[in-house]
Image (cartoon, rainbow, N blue to C red; front, side, top):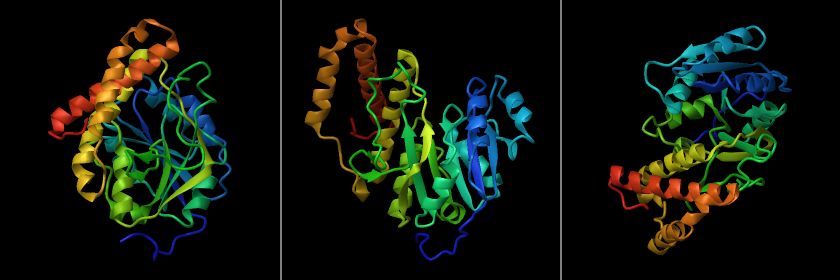
Length: 296
């Protein structure tokens, strides 16, 4: 297993797979960012409309011809992994690159991913968490800028907002797991790939400006969904070395939520941090109950 013995092109055709669901507000920014790519090889964009009810489809169609852009639709089911799998099924590229509609890729994004892909099977890039978030989300824990993050004390992973995988590796690893509807879909794919022997690399020059959630409600819901899917990860990967969360750590986290509850009435920064912790912990509890797994 693994792609080490496969001969791959040095200037591959790259298909950018971009799920779109009600992204009208941000689409023009991301499409303009894609238009500025410096990669000299062939590439295209497969925009996957996953049931948008706003003007996203019209925005996409207005860019056909301005970008090497194709618009495809999913079936009636919603979900980012459904959209990714649909996009990959119809993509022509030797290398699949993934980005999200509400972020902005840097001009050298594709070129840097392709360069790193010469010695790896899948590659994660770097997220710039400052450019699009002036005055927003300053309390959020930042991702590392010098390497890939490690998920849940187990293995590193490539973030779904900024990564690439060779087509032949994707075919062998398999589709994105559509059971992950609440986040950690990228973590699961990265875990599965590495445990199958595929090489995960880091491309620091592949930069994506990442947009944080703007309101407390959005932040709470985002981290709640992250928490919900982590027990499913543990259920699937505990037997392969994913460690449990120590009970004292769980108790300290819940105690801190209770003790600091008045922070919800305080400064935006204190309120945001409390909502982040509370949403995550509630999601973990819900996920543990749903998946019948003691991972809190």
